[in-house]
Image 1 (cartoon, helix red, strand yellow):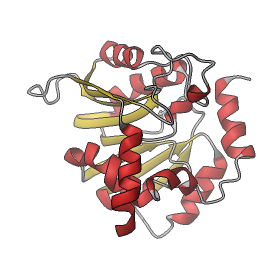
Image 2 (cartoon, helix red, strand yellow):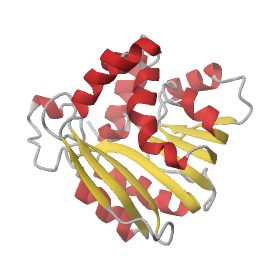
Image 3 (cartoon, rainbow, N blue to C red):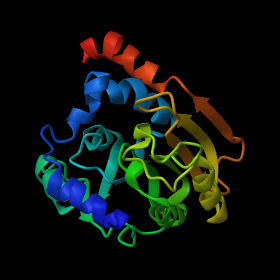
Length: 243
């Protein structure tokens, strides 16, 4: 089955979304604990931001936090069920806009306008053709000082595609391949953090990038984090009770 069609069927037709996506944060003690314990510390430097673009928001697990960090937010998702749920869930927020796309195009977003791009726990299912299309466009969509933070697969980087630990991860994507696409498109990678997920293998990567001329004083940092799952255990044990 084509990758885009697999994502549409899996997340629009098959997955029951019993807790609107919050079920995937159970290991962290819930989405609030995961956001403030693991995600927000990695992006806090770039927030709040005037215009935020979230790619593949699902049913709003992270959107609920991004809305409080933005003056205008755009959520773009392949699946109509997710768009409908976000429209309903965040109807009280006049600055929230949710748009269904084809899983590849960001033509509905004007160039040079987005101050922060965010995607977490969604693009890990996107193969390299999708990652290439999105990264090339995002370099153009970013404002002069805009920053993008994408969580994507790293399964092609020495992880056996048949390994159950790589299940659900796009097998054609690696940190190096994403880095090369961004640089070729005129962007510049600030940080790439390879992280383990569900095992000891670093099947995932968190990539932060900008347009080529932005933040010239910041160099490139590559992190091999073999303890991301330990972070999860610590956050659930010691932070989640506060949430």
